[in-house]
Structures are given as structure tokens and as C-alpha cells.
Image (cartoon, rainbow, N blue to C red; front, side):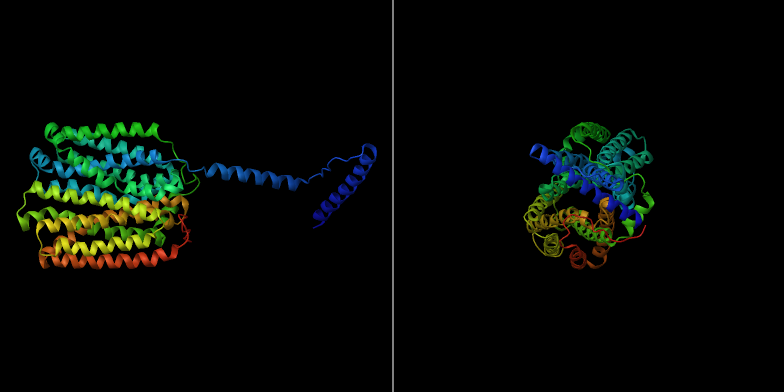
Length: 463
């Protein structure tokens, strides 16, 4: 207090001396210049701290300038990654014949991606937060290229399985880091539609690789694997130079274990993961069994049944884009989610339980896929709102993808067991119950985040 009073008295004497000096100058020259008061050391330090803080904030939060070209480049990484999911079902018969494998063993080629995603989503997302999303996308593409190359030269099933695990890790890296990169680089005004474009990478990628079936016949499955490796490597090199890197969200001083515990302990990411699991379980129950339904009930050939199913899956991409436009026009994510799950319930009954012609069932499948396509866009768009903190957006996205992969694994297994014991109507009823539960969970959790925009929830979770 004594030091503060002395400083105030010094300032008062300075003002008095300044006024006297100004009167002398006015009488001598007719005008007086400005009076500059001396500043104390504490005032100088405070001004310096304020200036440094403003400069630091400006450097830490660069303006979002990326536009549609960046969106399509990022989405392209997702599309070439989705090739690695679509290529396995196409080549399953050729791989089985070439390596002399049983159907049980070869089916693990399909399950490897889902298992990896169900285990490592959150850690991969946290790694993206720490090292930067661009590095994670490029690393994911490179890992997939390595895996595809190993698979193409594998002499037996052991190395082929290892290659699929490597591909799965790379695929999850791209799948988690891609949306996080859109959130951190793309202009705010187009983010809803940008996320809708990202959500189309699976149907676009899988449909594109299915259309490349003549190349599989021409090159054989090994050549097709090596071609995918070349495409992935080329796109990784292109990505390095085509798009600028956003800053990593996490400072080096923060502990990765504490951050992972915060992401896992917060309720928001788990709510997203659970709703994602409900969506993917319903989606893969329908389209995992639809070809066999069409061949078993109506005697359609395998090629025609697969084509009908592929056309229906492509409709989900249109649903993705529709969801983006709905969100951009101001529709609430909860309403978009509820509409999607309502469509899944109604049209799911049409596909699984109704006694209709195969053309009518195909039409219901198209409508089912379109309405289901609304759901992932609303969920991915909400990831920043459900993240406990800004630097945990990637970890939240990873946990959501874990839920997606859990649903992909559990849904078809439970659906197949129900169909075998109680018939397909029981599967439709179970799917309706899961959809209702997902909407109720969404209503409870989304209501807590009304008006937060895309800002993280900042839930108080102790490390």
C-alpha cells in the first residue's frame, strides 16, 4: 500500500509540473504541445504483457481461409481410402481360390478393418490432435499403401492378414483426421456442406472401386492390390503439396494419458459413439444381408443382387449431401437425426419384413439408404460441440468412429442370429427399438448443447 501511494504522489507531482511547463510554453509561443506523463515500471510491464498476449492469440488462432478446393482434396483422401474397404468383397473369391482358404478364414479379411477401428479410434484421434491432422492424413495414406503392397506380394494368408491390419490402421487415421482437418481449416460458412461432402467418401469410394471390377479381372487380385498401393502413394505425395497444414491443437507440455482419460471420461463423446453404433448396426444389417435376401427369396442372380444393393448404397451419398444442406439452412442436428432414424425404422420394415416384390424391396432399400445418409452428417457436424475441449476434437471423432465400427461388427452378427431363430420381422423390430433408443439419447444429450455453436462443451473432467 505504501509503494502504491508513493507512485500516486509521483504521478501527481508530474501532472503539476507538466501544467506549469505548458503555461510557460503557451506564454512564449502562443500554443502548448502535448504533455507526456512518465509511466511506472509496473504499467510498462502490464502493457508489454497485453501486447504479447494479443500477439500470441493472433498466432494461435489463424483465420480459416480454406475453401471448396481444400474440401475436395481432403475428401479425395477419404475416397481412395474407401477403395480399400470395397476391394476386399470384390476379390474374396479370387483370394480364396488362389490361397486355398476356407470361407471362415477369408471372411476375416472383411472383419479386420472393423476390429481395428473398434479398438484404436480414440488413440488415433488423440494422435491427430497432437501431431497435426495433415501429418495424420498423409501417414494414414502411406500406411495403407504399405499394407496394400504387402498384401499384393504376400505368399500366404499370414502376411495377407497382417497387411489388412496395417491398412486398417491407415484407414482409421484418414477417417478420423479428415473431418478434424475440415473443422480446423475450412471457412466457417461452408462447414456444414463440407462435412456433408466428407460423409460421401464411403459410398463414392466403394461404388467407384466396384465399377473398376474389369481391372480386377485383367490384373488379378494381386495386381489390383498393387494398383491400389500405387494410387494411395501417389495421392499421399499429392496431398503433401496440395494443401497447407493447420497447427496441431495440443501443446507439447500436455500429457497424452491425461488427455485420453478426459476424452473417455466425458459423456459427450460416448453419446456420439453410441448413436453412431446404432446407425451403423442398422445400416449394415440391411445391406450386409440384402444380396442374400434377394437371391434367397426371389432367386435373383448374385450379380444382379449385388448391383441392386450397390445402387441402394449409393443413395446414402445423396442423403449425406441433403443433410449438409439442411444443416446449412439452419435445421437443428437433432431434427435431422430424428428424421433419419424415423426413415430407417419405416423403410427397414419395408426391406426386411414386408411381403413385397423384389422391385418394391429395392425401392424401399434406396429410401432406407437415403434417410440413413442423414445421420452420419449430423453426428460428425456435432463433434466439436461434444468434445470436452478444443484440443480433444480429434479424440472425440476417434471415439465416435469406434462406435461406428462396433455397430458394424455387432449389428450383422445379432441380426443374423435373430433372423435364423425368429425370422426377419424380428430383425426389423429390433432395429426399430434401437432407432428409438438412439433418438431418445440424442434428445437428452443434444439439449445440453443448444446454442453452443461448434464450440467444445468444456465438460469439467479431471485428468
